[in-house]
Structures are given as C-alpha cells and as structure tokens.
Length: 416
Image (tube, rainbow, N blue to C red; front, side, top):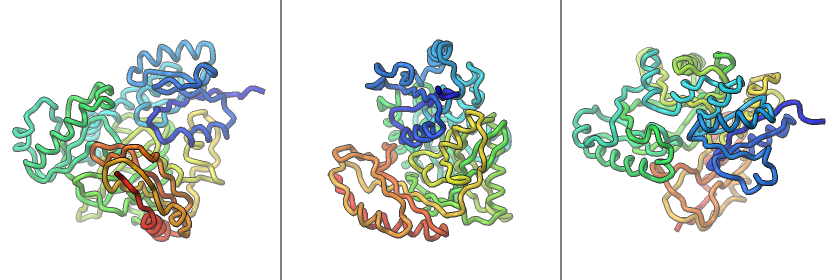
C-alpha cells in the first residue's frame, strides 16, 4: 500500500541535518522527496524522489515544483537549514501548504531587516546600524560606540561575527568581513552581501530557545544554557545544556521575548531557534534577542532533544508540517548537553586521538567527528564547520556538562 502523504525535504549539500531528518521521515512512512541545490549522483535512478532546485532563486524553484506537484501532489514542505527557509516558504505559499509567510522567512535571513522589525515592535535587541561594504571603514569607525559587534547580514553559525573595542579593531574587523563576503561560496548568496551590520555589544550570559510555532503560538520545546562566556573577539559556540538552570521567572521572560520576536517578524508555523543575551538590569536579567531563525537548532545539536516517549525533534517538526497528531511536546526529564568541539587552529586534519577514552566517560552518549582526515580545518570567523560534537545525558545539568568537558579533555587533534 502506498504511503498516504508525500513530504518534500529541502536539504542543502552543506548541512549536517540530512541523516536525522531522513530517518524521522522514514519512521513516519511518508513518500519522501528530497530536493538539494546540487545534483545527486542517484537522481537519474530516482527522478521523482531526488530533485535539484535553485534555492537562491525562490521564483524559479516554485515554478519547477508547481510542475512536479501537478504530477505528484505534495502534503508538506520542510526546510532543514538556513539556506532553505525562504524557498520553503515560497513553495508552501504557492501550493497552499503549512509554511511561514514569505516576508517573514526573508526577514530571518537578513539581519538588518530583522533588527528593523524587532525595533519597530519594541522587542529588546541591540542598537544597530547598517554599513555599506563600499563605505570607508575608518570614517565609520569614528561614528560608532564601543564595544560593538560587526557581522554579515546573511551568514550563520557565527561566521564573520567579530567584536571591536576601538577604531583600529573596527577597521580590521570590517576588512576581514569584507574578504569573507567576497569568498565564492558567499558571493553566490547574492542579496545581502553588500553590507555589514554593526551592533552594540550586549553584556551578559547567552541562552538559546528551541520552539515550535502552531498558527502563531510559540511552544517552548527546550531552553539551553550556554555556560561558556561568549564575549569575543569571535563567538564560537561550544556547550549547550538543557534544562536551563535559570530561575523560572527568567525562563518565562526569555520565552515571552522569543514569542514577541516571532510575532514581530510575522512567523506563524514550524520550527524556531532563538538566541538571546541576558542583559544585567536592576529588576533582573533582561532577555535581548540576538537572532531568530525559522528553522530548528543547527549542527547535530537536535540529537540532545527527545519528547514524549522518545520522539526526536525532527519527527516532531515533520508531524507538525504534515498535520499529524503530536502526543506530547514535553521534553524528557533527563538533562542533556552537547559540545560543538572547538577548533584549536587552522590547517589540514591528519588524526583524531582519544575517541575511545572520550566515549567511555560516564554519561557520554556519543562523540561524532564531522570533518574527515585530510579535510581543511578553518577556525572562526572565516570558518563555518565544526570539528565534531560530543553528546551527554545525565540526571542533572551539572553532571551532563561535566561529562562533556571530561570527554573533551581526552580528545587530541593533529592538524597540519
């Protein structure tokens, strides 16, 4: 008997998320169609299930999918990474499927537009100004307040994000980001690569909220603490721990601020990932929105989350898109944590040692190395890929975090 529903997954070739989303789709017994931005070597054998779409041109992608859907109607479209959120909205809107409004998805992909909408809705966020790439950075450096953070409008994973504490650091950061925006893989993004956003630096600890929107209502799925300071000059993500150890009143304020941010951008449906700083204030920490994305948590970090009787984050997202029932959005009771393994230096990865010892640490579920031997390792701010991930699960957040750090101490990387 043929599956009753057909699902279109939009998967960039550079994503970490393919395996987890494909596994979730198979567990739901759907007719799975995968579209990527590069031809798959197997697409000739499976022309109805492996498609190539121009993700950077939503209009052209919609035109192609309309023709496909006329033959093989689709029941849902799901983006799995930043590069596919806009085209997913365009396709969903064109075919009458669950999706965010196109303008809302576009706002999440341009940090200047995001900042403008958040400011208009009085959602706490950093002060900001947009600086054209053609401007003289020395002139601009004399006009901003310090410390500040310079960042590209369109990149993710902290790529190109640099703190500056004075005019000289501003000019150096500006020139470095200009070079990043000129890289071939960035230049092809097109719109948004001609300017830099300059934000006021927000002091305080950082948290990440994972949520799911249903008809405009935001359900908090998990709140992650980020125990390592993220004060620059670069902002490499390391440890995420859930459940949060913050006071309940602070957690509630974070959830409310994230919901306000989603409404300000016009997001209505599907996964949401929101990064916030807790700015010190007399009345208690004030959540300040750094970023909000219309997709789930990046990398392999979603593997930390389980819901109900063991449902993965990816299955929960697909169930919502397909309109299937979700028995429970409550996260399991155990604490969970993930470390995005820091990159010690750039070069060519030659060897990874200590894996068996790291995996033997109590409470460690897995250690995954995502770069291959012989592959180039590029640190931030130019890089955008991690060495790998360490996962732990324990009775308490303290134990889960401690296990990550112990496992990391066993690892050693030979980088030439």
